Image (cartoon, rainbow, N blue to C red; front, side, top):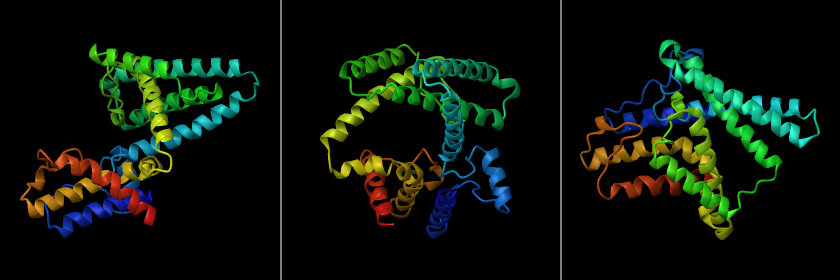
Length: 270
């Protein structure tokens, strides 16, 4: 909630300070209650530079449900029974999500969208709990290479597409997306383990320690760079959106590196 307000205030301040025609959305309504209602109804996209809001809400709810679920299945001391119940639950949720998303054109609304966000997040969290319970350490190079190859083949054959999780769009369907994502997660976690072990005490690890801050503030930081470009390079800032920014052959370097370097150091000082 605090970050939502801070990001909105920074975006509005940039707009006013640079006297620039920037679209920052409608982050605030008449009062607190109306602001909350607006954010929920718009999937947090009313605050254009805090698009991660939907993610934080959905995952908070999923974490709560997961904790209740784990306590419930902990009645049994048999890990195999817990795993069976967990996998069965994941299958039922994926089937339900598939049926809902396949027929979304006729009755879709934000409440269903939030429901799918929560259900899919719960599936990933529960699968992670299964992996932890069976002491999976993401350190098998053969599994990592196999996972990378499977994901590559799936992408090449349009069996795994870029999802738009904020709006519950999973290509080509939730089953293939979930399978592909699990393979991708293993490959990424294996790579992350390798980097962490080879970069002990390195400042590069700040990127993981402050990933939440980077995710929360990087869009509004990009807006700041856009405003500077507007001021000094005559950039038409009306073209700027949260995902579209001032671009030249060299500018992408700054857009990628500056948020990664400056946001962690700023948050660390605060």
